[in-house]
Each structure stands twice: as structure tokens, then as C-alpha cells.
Length: 54
Image (tube, rainbow, N blue to C red; front, top):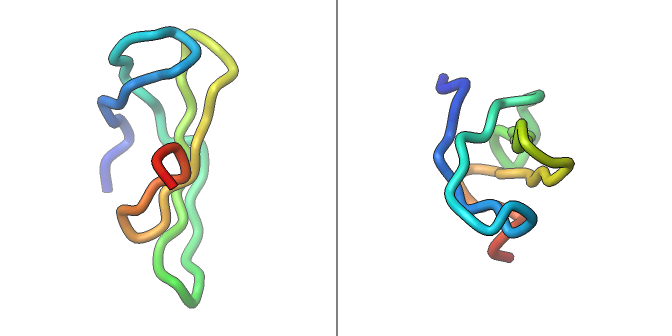
């Protein structure tokens, strides 16, 4: 279980290290919330599919 994730931040305009804010297990799989420490941007990833690209 990783607590950090390198991901492109659309608000900052570059690659940032996102931090795991929360996680839970659903019938679809694991739901993880990630947040950028430099701005208010966050996204959700369920079973490796993230809301930032969906």
C-alpha cells in the first residue's frame, strides 16, 4: 500500500507527488483518494482507474 503517487496535476501544470488521503474497499475494488499537497486538486482511483482520465 503506497502512501505517495507521482501524477500530473492539472492545476499546478506539472508532475507532483500526490498523497493518499483516504481509502476504502467497495464491491468494485479498492477506492483511494489522492490529493496534491501544493493545491486543492484531488482525484479518486478505483482498482487502478483514476477519475482524472475518465
